[in-house]
Length: 586
Image 1 (tube, rainbow, N blue to C red):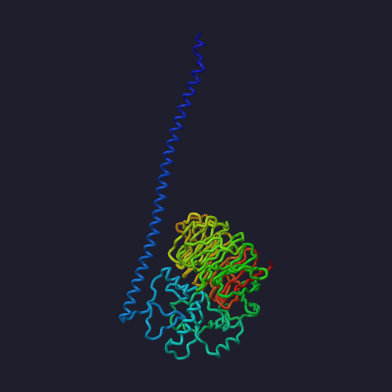
Image 2: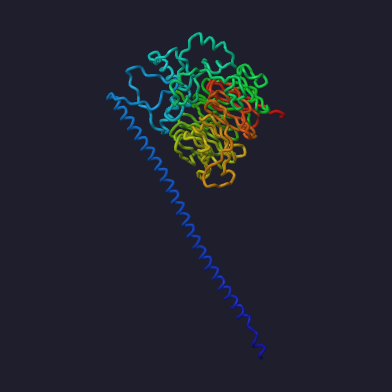
């Protein structure tokens, strides 16, 4: 009987196990509730901080807008006071000496007050009117009406006293060249292309579509001869190929054709050569050139229209023009870009509109509106869905091809001159009149890099391009230099400041650098300049390989083919050209 009493009944054992399970479940439930409370608290704090950051961002944006409005108000008030002083007969000293080629008002006429601000409106109005603004030069095509008016007013101008006849000025945007004596014209016509007179004298070609000379130069300097001062014979000049006189260069370091020539760097191994493939004539200035992703076609932008050419034979296969636009005045296409699949061509113009053309049907598929000033640059992301645009309204915008909406707006302090997507689409970069390059996360819009002083450019940045590896970037500026940057964010690095590292500075152009690019293999940097030259650079050494002179006016745009060793150039001489570059032993 005692043995039987020691045995626990099965029902009691089950009850004990169930009670233990119940207690364990309650413990786990309590811990889960506690963790849930902690999570809710963390989520609340995170959302609160994110809202605060968004509010701070919005406040900064509003402060920036208010600052601009206040600045513009003060500028208008200063201009009004100056006009009032002038009407009362008071003398108002000029802020800057007259720019090269600027017309001198006739005696007795009222001089308008100088623009004192650095607002984007004043700068870009100067750019588009073909006149130098107070903060930077002009990049506008020639305005025929303005040129005609200036030519009519020119006989009435009273030149300042001089000891001899005034020498001619080099033509520029918004400038009308002074008349040259018939003897000088005859001498220039007799000079060959390789001579300095042909390269820098007067021609019947259109006026250059590039920035004017720096306004801060002395008046005496603005009256200098249009001929470039040639260096006296001496030691080799290395990267300064633009300073060399073609006639004095040894034959082994130059190559000449009918209307173009190449000078090779005598300090660098000659491993690259260039030949002309096609010349594409246009009715106006060629503002931009761009290859399709497969390299079979090249697009150009000029006044009122975009064209597409077959790269193999140089024949025009497509002409795109919006006939609904008013025909009065000029409407220059500032940027063109193919979609990755080659079905569409995006164009950005002075009317603040982005048109996405269906190439096959020659119809507009999308019309993106929202920019408040002229559009200067476009770039397609490789996903084919997003387009980045840069405008004089101080914004970069990203557009969605599927929804037709603007999905991201990035505001900066000054006009945007150039934009580019990284190869992987993660980042979008932009150059600005404020001398800096910015790089944003293309999804969130957060600024991840700002490339500027002390190693940055000393003047406005007019062109940026990512390297094929997506980790480096090149920029070209009005300070006549090109810079190669190593991006920290693209390398997954973080530092105390948002700034990449300038690893190379390319010097050698003798005037503004207007366009830069890298070849698809990343082995060469190309640059186009107001000095009318195209240069190839070794990114590892910053050494110039060669200089190509193939246009009679500024080289506004350069673009390498993504699929072959070809590149295209667009110029103020109303020509686009397709070239072939050949690498030794390939």
